[in-house]
Length: 280
Figure 1 (cartoon, rainbow, N blue to C red):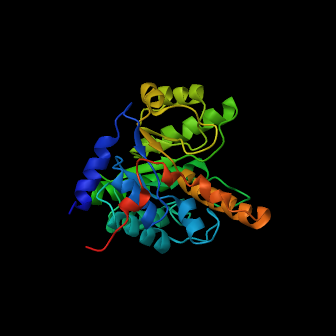
Figure 2 (figure 1 turned 45 degrees about the vertical axis):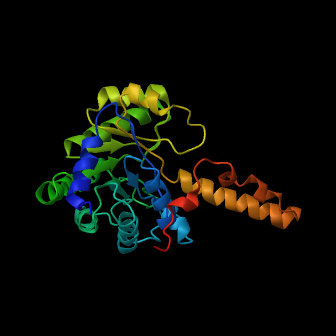
C-alpha cells in the first residue's frame, strides 16, 4: 500500500515549472477507477462533479466539509495516485474554518488541496485581500507544522478580462504565494498572453484549468510557457452528464434510439469496464 506521506511526497515533486503534469478530476468511484487504470500522474476531486452526483448545484453551500472529505476518502481508496482535494472556500469564512478543513484533508490522506477566495456570498463574492491572505497564512502554518509536503494551492477566482482585473489577480496570487501557498491557480485564466504575464510576474507553480470549451492550448504549449500543473475541473463530469442528457432528449423527443449508436466505447482501444472491480 502507498502511504499518505508517500503520496504527498510524490505529488509535491511533480510541481516543477514547465512540467505541465495532467491532473484530471473524477467525480465518483467509477470514474476514479478509470483514471487510475489509465495511470495519470495524479487525480483531483471536483466540487462541481461531486455536487452534481449528489443532485445539487456547486458552490452554494449545499455540500459541507464532512461530505467533501468523505468523497475525497472514497476517491483515495481506489487509487495509488496522489489525490488533490477541491475544497472550495474551506467551508467557512474564517482562517480557523480553513485550518479545520486542512486538518481534515491531511487526515483523510489527500496529497494537497485548493482553497478559493470565493466567499459564496452573492453581495460580496470575493474575500477582501487581507482576509484572503490570512486564510492562506493560517492554512500554510498548519501544513508546515503537520505535513510539510502537503501541497497547498491558493485560488484567485476573480475575472481577468480587463488589464485591471488581471493586475488584481496577479496581486492576489503574489500575496498568496508570500503567505505560504505552494501552488497558485486562477481558474479564469485561459488566454496565452495572460497566462504568460502571470508566469512572468508570479514566482510560484501555476495550475491552469483546461477542461472547458474553447481552450485550445496543448499540454506541450502550456509546458513550454512554464505551467506546472493542468487540471480539468468539472470538465469530465460535464461531458458525462451532457452526453447522458442528450441521449435522454433523443429518446423522449425523437422517439428513436440512435443515440446508442454514438457509444464511443464500442470503438475505443480502452474499454472503461476493464477498470471496474470484478469478482476474484
